[in-house]
Length: 179
Image 1 (cartoon, rainbow, N blue to C red):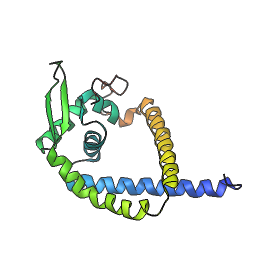
Image 2 (image 1 turned 90 degrees about the horizontal axis):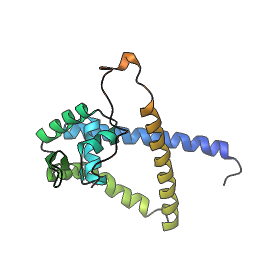
Image 3 (image 1 turned 60 degrees about the vertical axis):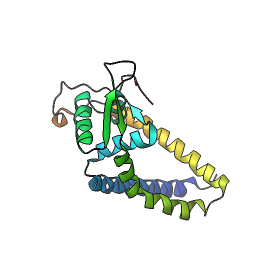
């Protein structure tokens, strides 16, 4: 640990903020090129990278959306050919959502060059031990971020920002299908 943590911590904070802003910018441009909004893109990312199939309630919880908002989002993505919905194999009341091959192919066409450059420029620059340390740092940072997303989602929306105060969020409901 550094004997002067304040300057290092300040620089780290600025670098993390800059990194987060550049990720937001990249996501916004990716969404634009896929013809979706950023929430729709995040839904596709969840289906392509985290859980290959999910119930709409899981997506609602992960995205902090109402069930009605998720239904509208899934309708948009299905119309674009980016996802499919099918009946749950053992519970006819439930639906399973999956990203399509077309969505996956288009997504990787757009992010592939970034991933390739990252592998070339970053993985060759650092030792395995350094990459493990960076990975641990990012995992811990991600967990802190997720805790604070949950904290913010638990706060009430100011009345002036609420389109319909009767809507309910499903983010506290259990996931009924995670893959």
